[in-house]
Image 1 (cartoon, helix red, strand yellow):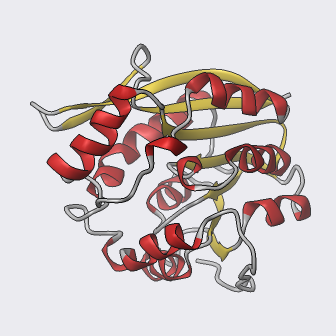
Image 2 (cartoon, one colour):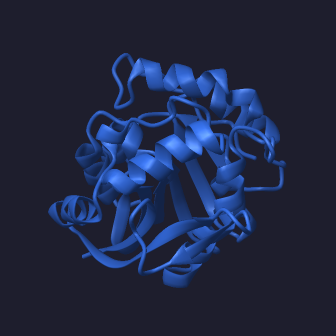
Amino acid sequence: MNTTSARTTETESSASPDELAHFNQLARQWWDAEGPFAALHAINPLRMAFIEQHSNPGDQNVLDVGCGGGILAESLARSGARVTALDLAEEVIAVARDHAPDYLDIDYRVADITRFAPEHTGTFDVVTCMEMLEHVESPEAIVAALAEAVRPGGHVFLSTLNRNPKSWLLGIVAAEYLLKMVPRGTHDHRRFIRPGELAGMGRRAGLKPIASTGIVYNPLTRAFLLNDRDLDVNYLMAFVKE
């Protein structure tokens, strides 16, 4: 694991202090597959399957933005990718660095994508940003920065939550309070993003939407599945840079 890059902190950032404090507080539980981030562990194979369906991250330069404790970053690196992974939560990045085996090619950085992208224009073949856009002040600015970092013809993969009554019921009431799949206070429904809104952000940044699918939870089997016809709650979207 390459940790030689300088750690950068920001006086201003695209994430609110409350959001960063929330995730820093839970940092040491990130790799507990039965803990507060159990849902991220459960859906990670689905995220990887979607990425690999529409691109080939192996032996590619990949940027994972909002990497958290490194669940997706490690999977990308295991596929053969050279991964640069960014997050603004310093304690979470520390956990990610400690967890990753030395043989994985991951460069973890405490950095803001809106500052990182102008210095790395067109550097990456694949860019991922999962479960982050609903936590930032300006998701459109983040999407624009992701588009700047990817090379022409490269792919960008995003995931977030839809904004509608069903997503409030299932994504917050059920997930946070009834099933306790994620910690209480993780989400603010007002920050959820409709698929049409996300596609529009991508187009304005020079990204062409090429695919989308929903992540659906079955409470009977306690399993997550991809469903192209149900984007009502959690969903993934793939773009290519034109």
